[in-house]
Length: 315
Image (cartoon, rainbow, N blue to C red; front, side, top):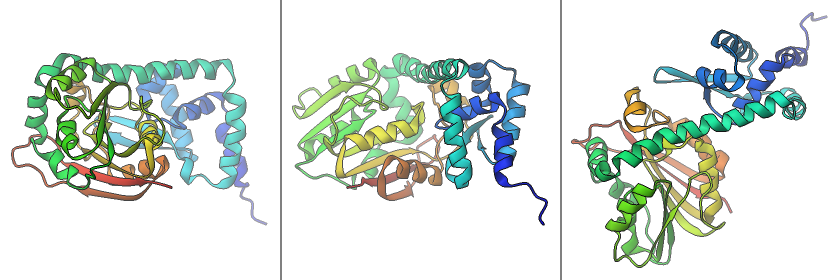
């Protein structure tokens, strides 16, 4: 007889500690650093690191390096069926505990702090944003990406529109552009650029909760914005919500890089995205026919390499 204990007993041992279950609740749908977890659960780094190691050894969490930090998330897709069923039971019980409720409140504060860093950069840099962006990425990257679509009857969303460069390029070719940005300063600059364009609707709002009705858009663009978004998967899911079935989505962003100074200088939250990471996030958001292609670098550009990802919302 095999003396090895059933796997379910190992799973029970991993979740028996309340702190480990609280940590799993936090990384179930978020990528968080050790420092962020320490702030949320209000425990020292040595304690949090010890619990993360136990969870990693049990196959419950995975980590990836980004700059000088490691980001931890729950391995939901890789768990065996018995572990997933067990976690649903544990999550239901632990999630309603007072400590877990406080954790969730502090989590929202942590995510808000990420957003504040980006907004501080935009508020101070709107006037020179075109120069900063052109210096980093060149001034024609959006044209290469936009060549993939333009039908005269379309309503297109320019999400994270910034100063309106993409909107200005798309508006002459489509019925309407709904341009959304979370920064009042950026929208003010966009209004100046788009003065006279009668088929453009500028709106202020966050990507995770777009001020657009369900199934309103035929196509949407997200140009060099995702690395500023605290909750990328939530934003991609909301973009899917506002697209019509079969609607097209074009995403341009940075490939992974190690320039950690961008966090301080420009308020970046993420240091680019790997192709498999984008493919996974788009799939979870409900997109199919996903293609991810690195863009040819502009010889004058000083920033990291870029990619374009396209997808189609499922019927």
